[in-house]
Length: 139
Image (cartoon, rainbow, N blue to C red):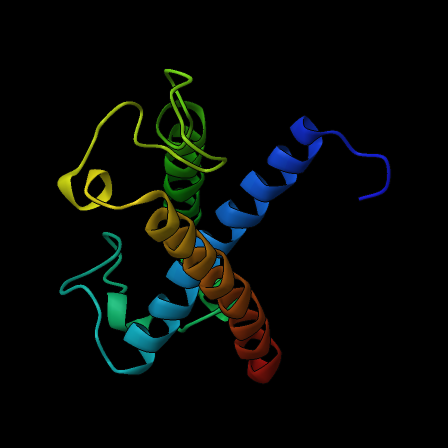
């Protein structure tokens, strides 16, 4: 980014990590549903089964409106209250541990932490391209 300061770079990196994490979940969801795995039972009182919901964008049309509302409300809740650096203690953009120090992270050297961050960033980039390819393939 031309003439950007560190704060702008950190914001862009945070957004890139966030979109990468969402894309990784989306690809995993596609694979899981295509493998025939779904929640048991019905998604609504009308008898629509989870297995009746197709993958990808077509699935949005099959989910009842109240279900989409619940999904949007849940995403909003995550955005506002969970997926952020609440305490300002994040080690890097996208660090949502909020002061929690899990043993698998605290035992790593700074070089190992940078390596893990680079792996996550690259996996997220690959997943963004992967989910885009899956969505184009649906058409």
